[in-house]
Each structure stands twice: as structure tokens, then as C-alpha cells.
Length: 61
Image 1 (cartoon, rainbow, N blue to C red):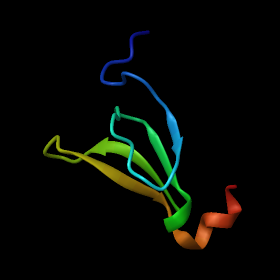
Image 2: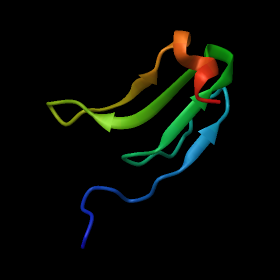
Image 3: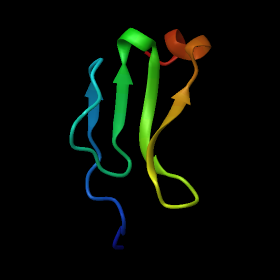
Image 4: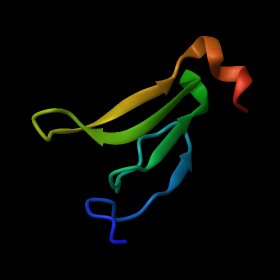
């Protein structure tokens, strides 16, 4: 099975935004207590999508 559109999946644990990112990459930002995934909106524009709210921060670590 060939996966299209996913070039690599990395997990970054840092407060600064990663400079190189691909679809599916995860950015855990400890200073803001957030977990984000690099994604695209309905107009195909890239953005970081927040997938874990601050309320749930402690439950997934």
C-alpha cells in the first residue's frame, strides 16, 4: 500500500516552531502546554492543528 501526501512523521518536543515540517508531523510545545499536528485546511493551506487542549495536557504524558 502506498501512502500519498505523507513524506515523514516526526515528533518535535520544543518551544520553538520546527523550521522543516511535513504532513503528519507532531509538535509538542511544553511552554504552551499544547500538542499540534502539521495539517492542511480545506483550501490546502498548511497550518498547525491543536489536537490536545490544555485541560487534557496531563492525561496524555
